[in-house]
Image (cartoon, rainbow, N blue to C red; front, side, top):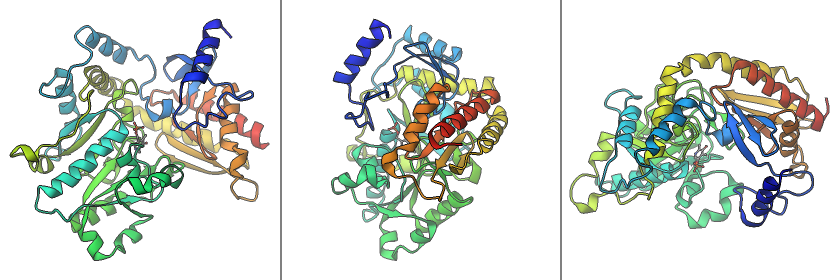
Length: 430
Ligand SMILES: *Cc1c(COP(=O)(O)O)cnc(C)c1O
């Protein structure tokens, strides 16, 4: 290892606090933490010069690959103008262009306003606060309740974690957040007592597939059904497309697949192509207009980096790449490669493969079809083994995530599936 790398590792070990990481185990034994120093296309390079396929799109963010010339160029060009200016009391050309481009991705007269923030959690926070204040300013003060789905994930800030349904992450904070009714299904939603439904402000869902819940797709038609229920009950629908947005499910947005338009749409991860933290909450003119009037109707919410010009420039360039490279048209061959590659693994430890577009979860279980004991950490061990075969990804418990960047060639996806097959065989046997 180079001297530089040794120093970085030491400073990381002593001074960094990593997300979702048990530091008592960080860097223990042979599980040496990676230092990622470079990337190109769907590949990443570590401090030792080893190359890895970016099998989870750098935690679900990367779209067109690393160091894409169009996005690199747009960010560089923006640096020659200005990096960041405040969006409080001033506009900027990149944010204006991006708002227009995002609105134009939806049918005219549906989602018309864009509120920028920094990441998925804040996109959700903004939607929740808008949903509450909208009711207060529409003579519906009683409508304060929220429904979210069990095992759903909407981010880690306190408001977003109140919506979260993954008990391992959120249970200890339950009493500190706002009350949310969690349901497992449409049936449970329909069975809610009338007085509860009357007091609801909004329902939030990850459309088509729950991500953190081990990549679990909803039954077909769920989203359209939920939209119809919300309309009938006068409840807003918040769609969290932080993971599913920007082509990941095979269409630009997951909601298109069931012809659903939400009242609030939350976008983040892939918005900048995976380059910079930027998020957007889109909503309707009707919601926006309820905030017009005297000072007390103002939406008093925002962040220092709202409308960041570098981030908006990257996002605009990412949308350009979607057009120039006809990215959506090229997705079916990649989605097929992922399906075929995963089907070819054929290891008895593969209990189930769940796929939605270019998102896949490969669940591993014991021979008797029971889950592995959590302390065996099979998922983490398989991902660790996959590194030696040139694949970098993460597991959610024992479900291995494979979510390649949209730019991956079908052959690269096939290779990544082969690498995963080898890693599973190494850890679980043939
Ligand atoms: C990642 C994610 C979030 C949170 O986004 P951050 O940028 O990590 O705050 C919210 N919702 C979904 C569905 C996500 O996948």
